[in-house]
Image 1: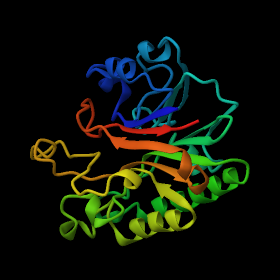
Image 2: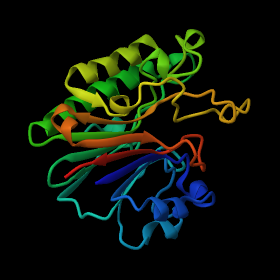
Image 3: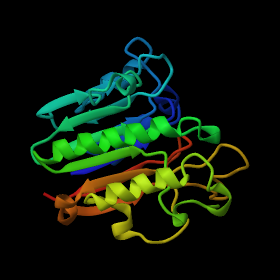
Length: 253
């Protein structure tokens, strides 16, 4: 089963930069998109009628903000929007698809923002997500994908020393990711690739992508029960269309 996750930074914008061609080329079983920034009356209709795929989405109440979306060839057993906490659910950050053998969570984690003004709220969201996933995990294994908005270790960004007080690399955010892994979850990419300079996001400024000055903040994380099913986990830096690139996970049957 092939899964793709991608923060598209505006689904309509990504459509104008080759998103449909990418979907057809990859032919994945499920696509999870974050930061779609669209609601039912503003999304490009082309995203709602792709042959072979069912569409599921959770837009934010605020127009032009946040939002997550899934395309799936496989009809899920159930679909849930949000996690039951209004302050987060209004932002359209979580979409859960239940399949026969696992739950798939498509999540757009909050950004702690400049000077970490939203750090407290982000950490509250993170803890709520962990509680939510642990509840689901009692029923069946869990796959979490999306933009986590955190680089876990120094290897996961180009300039760690100068970013210790920056959103996405604060000690508190990194500590929560460590807590997630210690709870029995696995950063699947690092099962296969332990090299530095493997990034999924680059600022649009300073020719950062061209110079590969980036951060790895997009992940596929699985609960430990699925470790033996992870066939591959990759970053696709050659794919353009956003300031993020897609990540791919393949699970064996």
